[in-house]
Amino acid sequence: MIQESHELDIGEVLLHHTADAWTVNFEPLFTIHLPRWPDLHIGTWTVNLSPTKHVFFMIVAALLVFLTMKLAGRQLERQRAGTRAPRGYANAIEAFVLFVRNEIAIANIGHDGAKFAPLIMALFFFILYSNLLGLVPWGSTPTGNLAVTGALAILVFFVIEIAGFLKLGPGGYMRTIFPKMPGVSGVGGAVLTIAMAPIEILGKLVKPFALAVRLFGNMTAGHFVILSLFGIIFLFGDLAVWNWGIGIITAALVVGIMLLELIVAFLQAYVFALLSAVFIGLMQHEH
Image 1 (cartoon, rainbow, N blue to C red):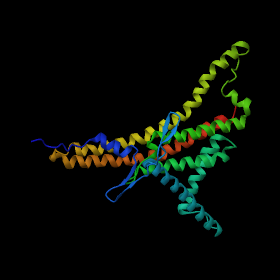
Image 2 (cartoon, one colour; image 1 turned 135 degrees about the vertical axis):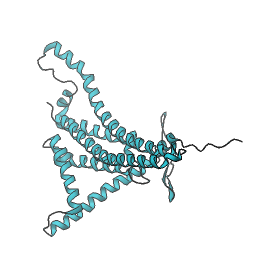
Image 3 (cartoon, rainbow, N blue to C red; image 1 turned 30 degrees about the vertical axis):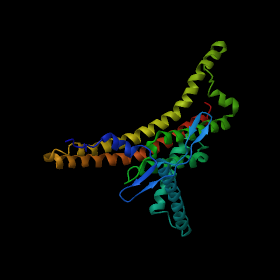
Image 4 (cartoon, rainbow, N blue to C red; image 1 turned 120 degrees about the vertical axis):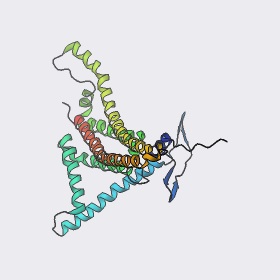
């Protein structure tokens, strides 16, 4: 008689919780089946713009950013109208906003940093909520998708280059690709300047690539560790003598990793915003 295998596939569990999907599961309560739209054919390319699970949670993150700022703004208006100092929730959000504006945007971009502060703040809070959504029940982490982090990095790349071109002008911007070689003139200087151009262009492309991969790698790795530790309980389920001991030790480790992931969620939002401001600042000053 052939017995069916009910062994747990840890790899399948990992992919089920971290990979993108066409449904959003809130089991055992309900499941949202997202709409499927027809493919778009652009030449030899086939593109499908149907929303997925990560798109759904990106929208949730964006709504949370909007509600956070809207509610904090209303509370600040009411408190200041009554000549009271900001306190509570509004005070906490104001402290976050001022920190991002002054210590990240203006500190790294310079006196023009104030006009980039809304972008840096939007990146910080959107990435923060996207990171945290993966730590709540039934949640998912959009920033654990390389396409999401890549899109954010491409957005920053265009801001860096376009803002740099507008600030430096055509001549100054070209100097960021064909830099002057100090102490070298004549034919030798021209040859070195042309030889450095591919390296400078590569440097421009490496910056957004590093932003995308760093955020994606950190957010994905944490969930893989947590789910793998949970899998230990099921892998050793047949050892009845050790069930309680393995369960308690694994649960303690998972709680520790979850707390670490909470710190990482804030840290990675900060790092992405910080490096974006640094890269924008580098292009704002020709030297």
